[in-house]
Image (cartoon, rainbow, N blue to C red; front, side, top):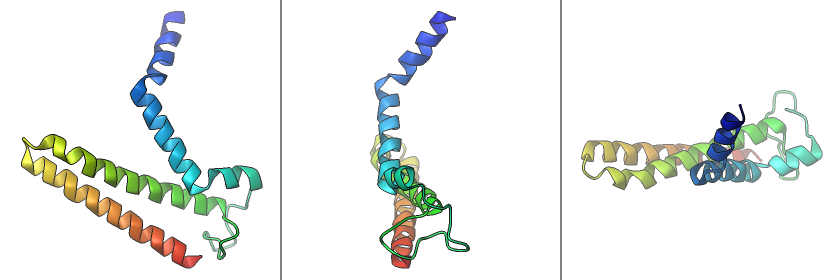
Length: 117
């Protein structure tokens, strides 16, 4: 049983796993995790999930921003990975177009959320 536990620990401490955990943590911090943990805001304000001012944030707004930031990062990662498939132009084009579309949709929705504030 000891050997299995060390296998899990070594898998969690690998460079790629640490990089992904750091990326997820960074996205959560950018979305407002510190504010949500420190202030414990309500989940929503009745029918409003976006707080109508810049001085506060609801928990549901944090979740929406977390999703949209993650969507933007996923799009940028697809764009970053596209040149890796130069030998398969159809796949590279699909990665590039999908990544740009995801990033564009995410930025558009983020601007909409910020416009509501």
